Length: 238
Image 1: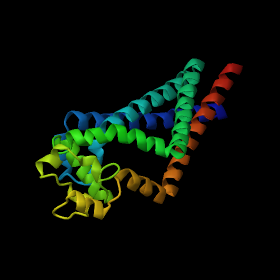
Image 2 (image 1 turned 135 degrees about the horizontal axis):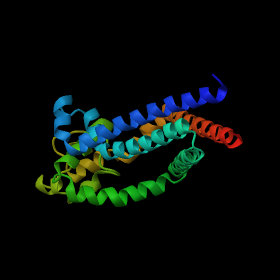
Image 3 (image 1 turned 180 degrees about the horizontal axis):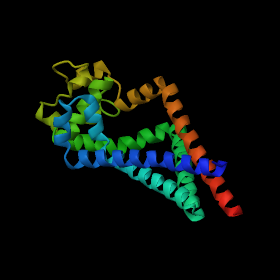
Image 4 (image 1 turned 90 degrees about the vertical axis):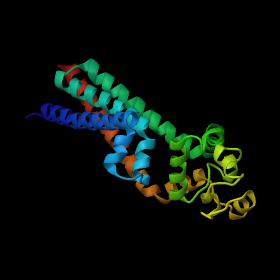
């Protein structure tokens, strides 16, 4: 088996795994989105891990679609030895690679900007739907319990929300370290951090793991681009 044939077979197998993995994520995402109740019934009670899966159902669909497309392009381009498909595969992976770098730079440099944007988007939703939308309320309750935080920024995110008005102008118990009564005075004294800061702190604590995963993904993407370009240049010489 020549070098070209070996690399071609490895590229087909590698992208087949990506395709199958993407199809699995896509299927799970669609299942949870369409029939989340049966998903929860199978996996038991509303644990935090299950709720996190429910929260990211649309994210799973997007990631699944991207992986399916990449895997399909990679398999077909190698199997058919098509320069056009190889270049398309290279371009798609390159675009994703650049987008990931750009997202990382924005996350590192513009954290305060991201916080401002999230506040403008999330805070109005909390004030409008927390206590009214059961799914959103449960999601935030689980998040605040897991991270020991309150709201996105602080307890004021829940002011005038349906839950706040229905509970005699009290705030959710996590805002007062899970005290049974949580008035504005109690919440101000407790001074519980917002979930945005807590999540950032968690990311920084696990920076090595996050960085390792990111580096691994980047290495795989670079390898995929190198292999596809090698195959393209080999076919170009034939």
